[in-house]
Image (cartoon, rainbow, N blue to C red):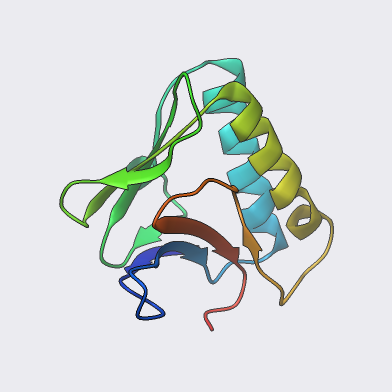
Length: 125
């Protein structure tokens, strides 16, 4: 699994942090990591510390917040995905289909009005 940041993908200042290039086994590992770290332990999850995730041009840190804000950054290198517990539970539900079978599809992992989306995409395209 890799992570990267794509700036201004459509000329309308829409950006994407993308988790991509993974298989079903890694999708399961990622889902279980979210459940264990954020849902059960209520701790932040720094993807730079995860063995099977390789950062390309950025890092992503997940954390609980009082409101669903989505991805925030000050430097376009370190990103923070801040969501409520309910927001993370919805994210886990959106990841679930990738844990059941190999897929070539993709999924945005939250629906927040924010200039940066989080894409979960098994293929690198």
